[in-house]
Amino acid sequence: MSAQTSAAPASVNRAGKPRLATVWLGGCSGCHMSFLDLDERLLALAERVELGASPLTDFKDFPPADITLVEGAVANEDNLEVLLRVRARSKVLVAFGDCAVTGNVTAMRNLFAVEDVLDCVYRQSATVVAGLPLGGDGVVPRLLPRVRPLHELVRVDHFLQGCPPAADRIFDLVVALLEGRTPELTRRFG
Image 1: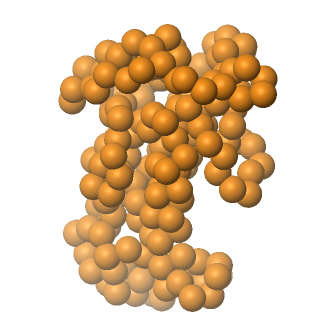
Image 2: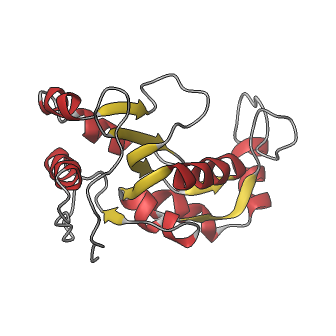
């Protein structure tokens, strides 16, 4: 996929650093595990950015971000609400991994009707059911009729493919964006 040219993040926070955020929607968290595989390069990133929000931080409302990596597809009402809020508050939004880019494994649910999925997974197979994803109970968000990749719902600035993307590719992408360069995003497996 081709990448759009993006300007370097223009705003900074009180610490004088651009704010990086990561978000996890419908997926397995493998992209975040790959992000953690940056190992000592996480320290190099920490010198250059402030981590504004991620599954590793405690936040109630998604704060404005210069760069946001969004993992996972949009599978339920909560995912959709989060994605719309994140898009509105992110200067640069990256579809982070194959579920975000294409729907990938998460979108395999699209082969079946929602009611059939609920019957098979929650009513017939589960030994413990904490709630059905029907919405309305304030606990378990309603499943959407189809699982969708991010670009079908919001503008995506860059697509980082891979299941999950390799740590080296994640690092190269974030550094390129911080330096105001267009990241090289040729298709590679893994």
